[in-house]
Image (cartoon, rainbow, N blue to C red; front, side, top):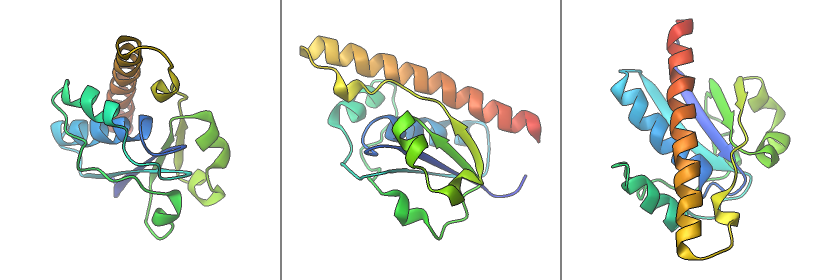
Length: 145
């Protein structure tokens, strides 16, 4: 297997792509995959505190991750791209679409209006869906090699 450089893209690089980056880093280590995992957004809006909190509940610390824009990865050798929202998929630069592109739209929990409990439930649901997706994604890569 060549260099595995995974870039996860969403609109603001604050929630879904940050959660996916955290899980992909965690699972690549567990599966002994030599991989670099990055995330970026069409815009960089900073990491959502609820995303940090919901990940810490699963013992994964994403508080040190940074919020970046797609442009910051123009000169990187990216082998795999995952878009985690339709907006990012539509706005993904053409050169990145030449990588192994996977698209999976996840509901944006930061858009949930409501009380704290309702928002927390939305973040947990999103986190759990992304966790399953990331593990399945990496297992498919392993199965191909």
